Length: 113
Image 1 (tube, rainbow, N blue to C red):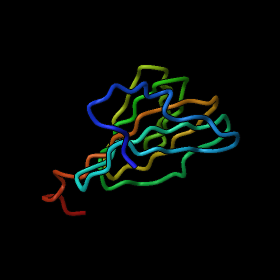
Image 2 (cartoon, one colour):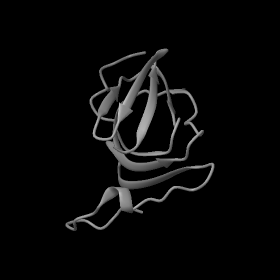
Image 3 (cartoon, one colour):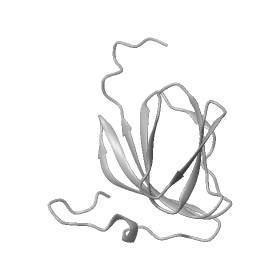
Image 4 (spheres, rainbow, N blue to C red):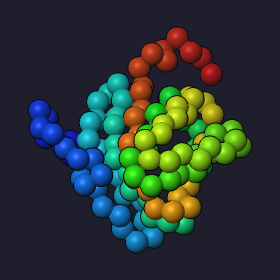
């Protein structure tokens, strides 16, 4: 369920940490892409994957380890990174953190894999 439109939201407050868990709340879901807020508890990680779309990750609380094609990037609050389409990636919580994940699904029609 998307959050209420035309209303101010404090993103770090619309999602809570759950012990030993990854919690995701989608705030915009469209056929052209999604925007989600994610809370990841310390020691947890998202499954390694290869997405067919670009994904923009922005840390809104804490620090994260984002691994793209075996290159480690350590991001802190306020920092972001674009995970390119068709690259192996993994996101780990060495300490708990919250992030915004934006996936853009349009603009890839001309690309063949």
